[in-house]
Every structure is written in C-alpha cells, then in structure tokens.
Length: 404
Ligand code: FES
Image (tube, rainbow, N blue to C red):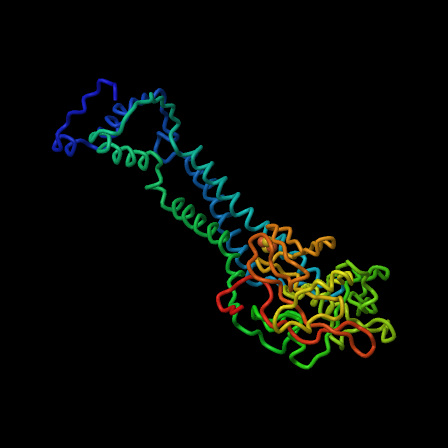
C-alpha cells in the first residue's frame, strides 16, 4: 500500500481496539474514503421504521407462502396427462402454469424483499477506494474481520430477528422449490411396474412395447398415419380414429425408410377389421410414446440387399430386402432418423454417428460404439409385416447391467 496510515500496531494494541476503531482503521488502510454516510433511521422507535419492517416482511412472507404453494401443487395437484374429452382435463391443464406461477412469485418476492431491505435499512453510503498492488499485510488481514463485523452491525440484521427469520426461511424454501422438481427424476430403472407388460415395456430399461411378444401377443409393425381426434361440435372424439395401421411389404418402395411402432393384434382397427365404433387411439398413442418403441423399417434396393453381411445369430432377422433396426441411437438415445439410401448409412443427427444398414447397423463413424439392435420380422398369412420375436439385446444407450 502506498498510503501513510500507521500500520505498525502490536498484537496487544490491535486487541485493545474496539470494533469501531478497527473498522475505521481498516477503511483507512484500504485507502477507502467514506465521502457520505447517512443512517436510514437515526431516531429510535421511528414509526417509519416499523412500516419499513412490515413492508419488507410482507415480501419475504409472500416468498414463503408461494414456495409452500409450489410444493403443494407439485405433490398434490392432478398431474397425469388427460386427453381431450377425458374427465379432469381442465384441472390437469393448470398443473404446469401453477408450478411456474408459484415458483416465479416465490423467487420474485424474495428478490423484491432483498432489494427493499437494502433500500430501507442499509445506511446510504458513498465510498471511494484507490487501487493498490501486491498482497495484504498482516494488519489488513486483522482488520478485515472487524470490517465484516461492522457490515453486520450496520446492516441492522442482528436486531431484526423477525425479518432475519423470514429472510432465511424464504431463501431455504425458494431454494427447495428450485431443487424440488428434481425429485420427479429419481426413479428406479430396475423396478418393474405393477401389472402386465404394455407398450412401455415393464418399466425396466431392457424392455419395450415389442417385448409383449414374449407374452404370446402378435405384434404388427404399425405405420403412423398422424390421425388426430376429431371435433364434433364442442367436443373431440377419438372413437373410430386409427393412428397406427398395419403395413404390407408393398407399402414401402425400394430405398425407402419408414418409422414403425408396435401394434398389438387387439388394438388393430384398420382394413377389413375396421370398426368405426372402436376407440383404439389411446393405445396407439401409448405405443408411439413408448421410449424404446420406434423402429426403422428399411427396404433395401435388391442390388444392395445382395451385399448385406448378416450378424451372427441374426441371419434370419430380415424379411427379404426389409430390415428393421431400433431407431434409438446406441450413443445416448436420440432418434437416428436419417437414412441415406445412396450409401445405405443411417445417421444420428445429435452427434453424427453413422451406422451401416448393410452390416447389421454397425457403427461406422461418430461416438456410438454399438450396433443398432435389429428386430426380427416376417410377414403373416394375411401379408402384413409382423415382429417374429423380441430384440435379442436391450435397445438404446449403455447402462451398467448391459452385457451387449
Ligand atoms: S445420440 Fe446419436 S450420436 Fe449421440
């Protein structure tokens, strides 16, 4: 430091100084000049001070109430998806907005409370400090604590227990409101869900909607028609709306790719068996939303099909020139949506992994290290494409128990 303030104090002298004296000395040593300083409420029991306490307290109390409201909504509001026309749709619609409003108000109220506290209770002060080089001397370090003590004193927080309690509680609860939703992500990926297998598998990472074939079900390769619920007057109806339809080999031209989903026999509502009174829409949507269900059905050109190298134990998984690979990238699970027919490569747009459609979906480039699982397929007696069995390895990215 380059100022002329005496800093040659003995330990005894420093210990003998009051906090105020040490704080003033620290200010001088830091070359800080306090140009202006004014207490907000210099007179004790000023009614204006009480009004200020009420005002600031209101914002912290509101932050607490909103944080508690957020937790209550998160825990108790009906959150499960309701489709058009289903009971509870109206109430469900408010779930996300209420989470946003309560969390937003909690954080906003706390921020307003902090700003108000600073404006109403911290002394007005203008200080100027010059820069200096090098590290701090012993005396600087000794006075730092005194300065911090002084800040605590001048903040007046020490004697405002109610405000301090409200502030602390609101900070804790608003913080909890931010980390609370993470609880929804904590799931046990190895726990089977109650009930039978369905279009989401059994809840474990190694099952999918296609696994239902192991329950003896016949599963078609369902093409997504994008059909949506129909409006009848004020209401929507899903009766007779068929989202997934069965496919025949001739539905796909050579060098083309189609994304297909598992379609159980009992959920078929197309072709000759179409019934306008049946409602299969919800089941079809469950199939489409199943996290490991999407499969790429690729029809190779005949000349390309001759070059195919089959993987051991998967030699009969294809049907003629038709190959079905999981669409879930083996890197970190993006949809590998791009099929480049000239090179017969399948591209994942997330991190540019490329897979060879002529070599059992083997990775050729990019971060993916494993081949795309292949679904065994065939055609039934009516000429529809069906799964011949389940995947023989888990679909999607790596996880600890994976053996393939
Ligand atoms: S998720 Fe496909 S390359 Fe990363």
